Image 1 (tube, rainbow, N blue to C red):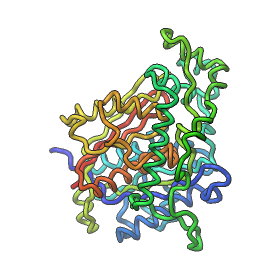
Image 2 (cartoon, rainbow, N blue to C red; image 1 turned 90 degrees about the vertical axis):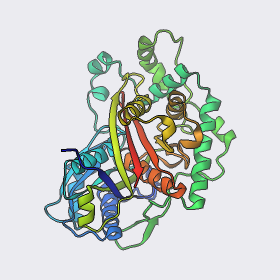
Image 3 (cartoon, rainbow, N blue to C red; image 1 turned 135 degrees about the horizontal axis):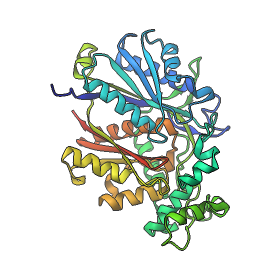
Image 4 (cartoon, rainbow, N blue to C red; image 1 turned 90 degrees about the horizontal axis):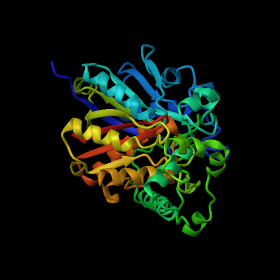
Amino acid sequence: MPPEAAFIFDAIRTPRGRGRRDGSLHEFKPVALLTGLLHSLRERNGLEANAVGDVVMGVVNPLGEQGSVLPKTAAQLAGLGLDVCGLQVNRFCASGLEAISIAANRAAVGGQALTIAGGVESMSRVAMGSDGGPWLEDPETAFATAFVPQGISADLIATIGGYTRQQLDAFALRSHERAARARREGAFTSIVPFHDNVGLAVLAQDELIREGADPAAMARLEPSFSGLGAAGFDDVALTRYPELRRVEHLHTPGNSSGIADGASAVLVGSAEAGRRHGLKPRARIVATVVAGTDPTLMLTGPGPATRKLLEQTGLTAKDIDLFEVNEAFAAVVLRFMDELGVSDDRVNVNGGAIAMGHPLGATGGVLVGMLLDELERRDARRGIVTLCAGGGMGIATLIERT
């Protein structure tokens, strides 16, 4: 018996707030970010409390305010049925898209309930890396696995690829320009403004976008990771790549993803689940894959994952209308475009995380919503979302409008 298709019925997100104490979303707990979004998803789609079977969310730092299976708590606060379950998953930056993959697999085996998937991360309240782990806390394990921080990996990618500081900054400026234009044109239709618990509007648009980003100011920014490199991580990287004379430190706060707070929610289910609840599918999840890569170079996963996805579906890069490649660092996307032979007029056409921020666990769902919005706006058919992830992993998902 062939598997059923998995459909996306809706995809929404909060605006991305600046992930610092002066950010608009800082005073709101992660569970509040997600609860408000679940409320909105129910209202938009007229969902009864028992329509949803599970809430699956990516959370990259699942401790403190983001621990203890936060999605289950948010489901109860949002008024979903007491029989609704919750699950949080962690595949580093790929967590949100992995959550959507879990929802798609559940729909494909004939589940009659809907699943809400996506992610949440309050980076201003739960700091990146605060969950520790062997790489961060165990020097023996870190040395044995040639661990380096992600910024060193990004600079290593730039060094190997021969990308210059000017190329990285130019890409970052493009991200800001495209994001600012998309905001002016109302392209971000998946954004649901965030309100506090008495209904007052707090944030309606992504907070990190800079209108008129200044290339001269960007060029003056100092490299972010040279200090880590000098502390010994360059030596670790060069033991894996001895053909290099040195690691060129080229990534700065201007051409790296912004720290952000936010949440995303994608409504996924089978055709039968959609009919049962009177929902019209917006897109079909065709396939989703993961791929492993060198854990020292670490951030090269989007290329191999996308090639694997294309091979699995019998398509080529030319068959894909749009790509959303998470802008963890500028070199990550430049390498992806070179590997796949894809021109930048199909990649991140409305900007990305360099301009708008990367709320770790939420980003996969954010990108699915952005991609679906733009496919509809252009009346285009197919799109791929892909992200790199720590430890040398990549994930890619193909969606097709119905």
